[in-house]
Amino acid sequence: MEVILKPYQLKLKHTFTISRESHDVQPSLIVQLNDDGFLGLGEATSNPYYNITVEKMRDAISALIPEIQAHKNKTPEAFWDVFYPKLKNNMFALCALDLAFTDLYSQKQGKKLYELWGYKTENNPLTDYTIGIDTVEKMVAKMKELPWPIYKIKLGTKEDIKIVTELRKHTDAVFRIDANCGWTVDETIKNAIELKKLGVEFLEQPLKADDWDGHKKVFETSVLPIIADESCQVEGDIKQCHNHFHGVNVKLVKCGGLTPARRMLNEAKSLGMKTMVGCMTESSVGISAIAHLLPLLDYVDMDGALLLSEDIANGVTITNGVINYSTKNGVGVTLI
Image (cartoon, rainbow, N blue to C red; front, side, top):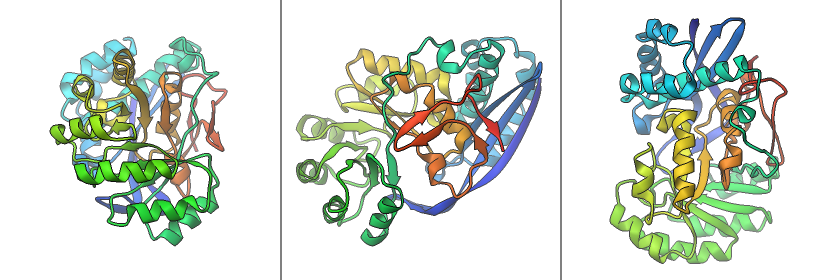
């Protein structure tokens, strides 16, 4: 099996701003596994919040290439179990490797990935489209540029209610709010009351990740559901999030790929929590992988490739929030 690592600089259509950072380019690593005439693809993007760079991912995977080749005949679950101890300090790298191997395995079985898992796709949720923090005028312009049924609005400023009030004047779409750890407990409880009046569906990660006392108070008091993101990174976090959040947003890069994500989502569902998967501004390689988890989800945020000025792959397509699968087996993606 041939292992190829390809770094990319994904250029965004607009400067993307959240409560703690802004960027115009998203570095990304593509893992390509070639074997028996099949080609599997995986992806993980860099992230300063988690201290992950493309170079760190590339070096971590490069050091394991002989072992990767030696385990080519395992199932994705067994493959993940082999490499988790070796990459547990770089889950982003593990994610890219897991996605590529799972794609390769599914193609070898002659099935689309969701078919391999036995999932039915008739009731898949719609994806939202993200509006980053900006001037109100520019946020409105971004909505008008791409009319959409559900918007995820990034907040974490002192003018958040004014921003949403103004945005509401221009669309009847559902709003979801992501404060990226930018609010206090009191702000969250107070803001939730006003935001509910403005047609907001839920709040995502309003408090800092480790403020568990605060999460508990907000969980018990907020008039809107609260979804964990930064507080829910790996499998062990699901139990801790239970009774502190109404749902969890599982990110493939943070948990180490599709293999653990499925387990996390099933555990959350068994605890009566809402399930969501989010993206980290991946190209269609990473976004197409998310699509196969849709039957497990209540909500999804898989607009990463839509935020790019130019994609590097063909995979799932998204029209007005509806996700359409590729005709190709596996994850269903090819590099351009």
